[in-house]
Image (cartoon, rainbow, N blue to C red; front, top):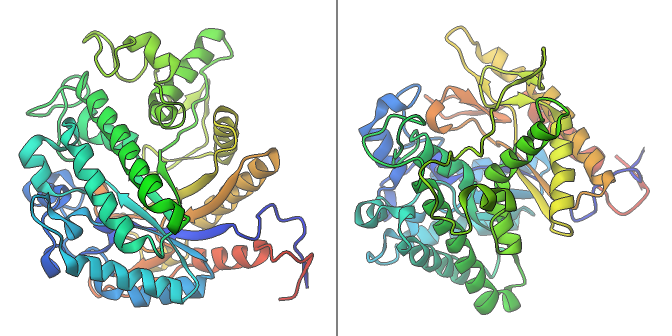
Length: 454
């Protein structure tokens, strides 16, 4: 017997795991799927990926999804975040017609999840889109992309919305823009010095054009859902923005304002227009009221020097991955910040996880005995509970990720999975973190009764 009454998680809280189509599905030209931007980028530029790999097979969830659903059942999760492969539904966008074999696949996956008590949490776009759209009009740099995305959204609402009640429009537009149009490390690899060395692009102007089109594409999809589908389907729709907590270098007013500017140029850049219909004041002050037009002299990082130390102390625990610092308290601060800036907006943690960078000497036993991931998840879930007790309106938590998978520029060398994947045989093996997460869910699921008999 265990007293559950102190759990901050409501009875309808979603505990899940996350994935995305390019990182998981494989089957890259199977059943009528068209080529997407990542298919082309990884084949044309293999040297851009740490292990020169690609997502042609990935973890083959296209064929192995029933096995993966069984793993979810064993974990005890009640939700699964997945994304739609745009080029599997519309191989060439609007001009090429609908691929009904793609529709059939997602219908089968969604039905199987629901049959097993797992709520599908569906993202319409997670970095990948038909290469045709890049070839025809430079994708997100053109307003045409808004119309294309609205068309995709309408098809998905029509075919899946009778069962899918949790929708995400676009995954991490801010992160996609940084990779694609500032640093040029993601397709379509557009950038300019000093941010990156690309053969095309302008890091001073294009990021704001692409962001503007993504925000308006999100708005178009939301409008379509609310006017045509929401009343009957009774679902919810939102957007995923990557967040990062910025600590001022010192307690001076200048440095505190710099931290706030950095926050606005990183996540509020997307969130403020979505929630309030306008760009953050900090951006307008720097870029001018005519966003996305602005002076070439303006720097797109918001005049913030980002360091991983404050004085002589590192901010959080450093890892083998430059962008990942372990700092649960920063997570709590970020949730409280979002709650204060966007009151009453429900929050879902759609990706949270620890990446183990595999080195030549790393053994399978080390990967399975992932105590570091357990420490990470424990710290962040404790911070989540604290933030919820502070008043953060969090409705769900999704661990990134169910399986080891293709991790973009890191290929298959960076492992985030609760389940280890042997990339030769595709065998899935639960890590210690899978058992830990299963026990955490058991201990914290609020059944509505003060006493939970185990």
